[in-house]
Image (cartoon, rainbow, N blue to C red; front, side):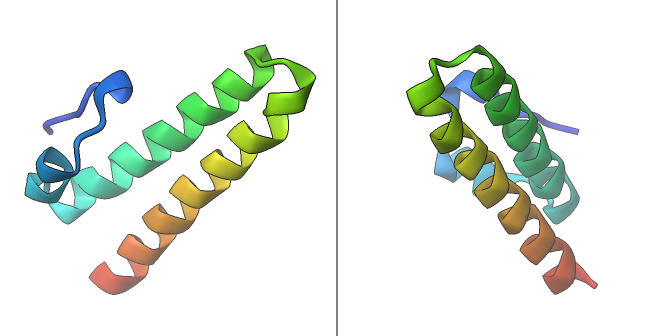
Length: 67
């Protein structure tokens, strides 16, 4: 499994991943956003949590399309 470094997301590399790896990557990005939320100032926590939810939504959509 190829993985994109979390700090260096690039769409062109993401599109070269298999669907399974894209789903894993989205879930990893969501987990990272949740972690960042736990470290962020109160005024930014919600933004990180929203970002995490969006990554999970993308992962779920990719999963639905693959089924």
